[in-house]
Image (tube, rainbow, N blue to C red; front, side, top):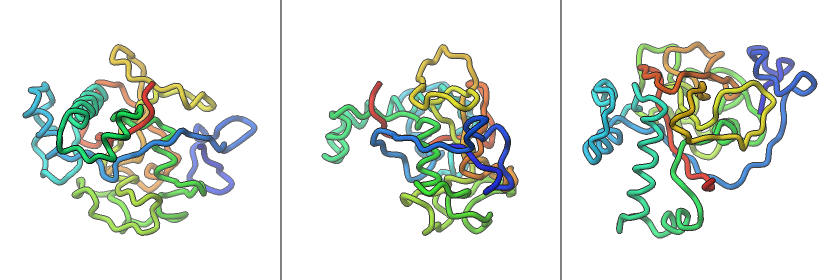
Length: 235
């Protein structure tokens, strides 16, 4: 994690891991992360099934576009609902049922999990490499695009939209580096800022780099904030 201005001239000072070390290699437990951002269609299914009181703007976009206007509690509520559905549905694939029964839980990724998924193990600047490429992500644009619209064969782990489209909530409270990356939370009463990653369609190239960090109040609902889910070891 972290960013070295000697390698990445667009790096922000707050991305340095510490005053003596620009970057650090972290060991993470095995986890899984969604290939795509959660879509408007998926949020509609959640609201129809539960009656959850979400902002109406979260339901109004094109079905295949990433959900937006979702707060941090909204995103966590969706992940908890999906976790319950997958544990009880007869249609859940056996491999996924085994994963959940073995201690996994559907949740938001931590900041560290998100960054590894975006940058792989080689510390690349963007998910696809070292240079900005508008053909690989939706940024500096007028709006979102359907999830998976950009082909990115260079991106690690086969993931889409890890740069741009919408900022993505994580379950990591925002705090300066260095910090313990296992310090994550799913406490709805926590009023701290929460880390967002990935940048959005509104942002310039500097903000869609894999190391860039954003933070927002948990109640923020914006056209440029969404999320993707992960399956992580339960706390």
